[in-house]
Image (cartoon, rainbow, N blue to C red):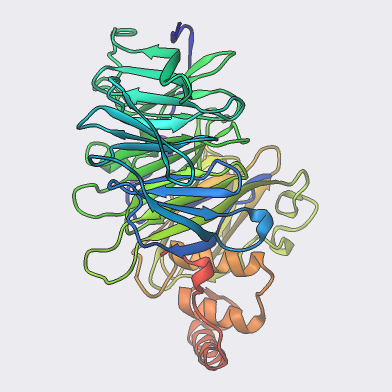
Length: 489
């Protein structure tokens, strides 16, 4: 009945290669022919601190807290509007809920104190209570093709189970089982999470003491082990943790990871999107959430839905955020068109300086060219300095040197400032405004002044004065340094 690991194909990853060393780092793919775009759609205030969110059921988002308060929102990108609250009720639970999910016909809640599994309708009516001695740490729906099937994962029993739910026969039927009670290759697997998708793949998050974090991916064709420690900052391998790993419906090459880089000092969480089809697996986007993430899910249309907690020192309600992410594939993008001079390509930054910040590049893939002062350099992952350091007040720019493969690099800025200079927030706003075609010369004055990145066409003092005057005038006319719809709070 149970699956076994069988032949394992290991995707090797190297933390040193990624060069992640600080939570102030931020990463993006430059000039890739396969680009992942992530942008905010909606933010909704909540009246509960939702511990669970289920958004994979079409046109609905289910939220539930540990006391059994449920909120159901109607939502679909086809509606072209933010989620609307449709129903609110309290489940008929006796004790606090420790696991929750929703299937096509049921709301399913588990009470760890009583070992009771309760089935409710989508309107909150109690259907059935069942004794459920499987001690699930997590319950997830897997009824993409067949109604009312779930996977559960038990850390204490070191087992994961697949069940079919049917209230008419007043029992749950065991369909499949992943048994980790015995060591595999002398490693005792410690399962703490599970995810599945419409391709009937099952992913188990393993945190054993030998290899630390990794993903065990089970599919019909092969079983794979994917190490996950490469997403951690290199200087925080022991102090940080991975809380959740999700498969992405309809995008089998992607996984979503909830990463806590400084678990003991701050509540900052990061949503890390990883392409596991690459060799080795690589980070393609990172989204920071300063208030911590309660729960997260991915819709069937490729949207991240997650809830955050209320900051302890602020009188603000809990929130639900929805982000869209998708791949845009350019077979012949202008950034990689070698027939166009690098300085004429729209994605080559103008020759500029950063008076107060150091820019650091780490090349992960592709051929990179950059101008540093009066010199021009070209290199790849084997020949580039690691890292490439651009010191303050040195004129520079950079571009793709060869389009045989995508150019992927990590960009770090040191130091970072809360209200000025280059940062992830300023990058989000510039990219968002350009993407939505709102960029004008007037908006550019405001952005350039805010990020303190100055073009070199006149002596620096004159350029700074021109930019500052233009920025002040345009801010009086309503142009801003950041916009709520483009800024990750």
